[in-house]
Picture (cartoon, rainbow, N blue to C red):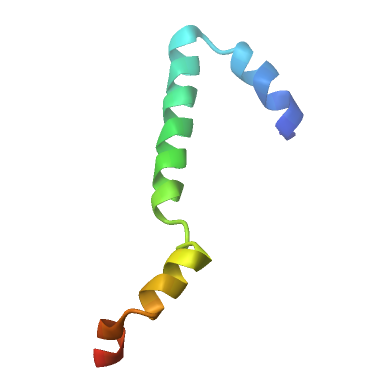
Length: 55
């Protein structure tokens, strides 16, 4: 299935199935948002903290 056909595929589903698709997309976005790597600026700030050298 190609990405450009997804909207058409979803539109052919019954309303309750469409809602499940939207719920699953929201679940995936939330799951992968938490697993994103730390931004470089935040990582550099943390690395420069004096307590890091303790470890």
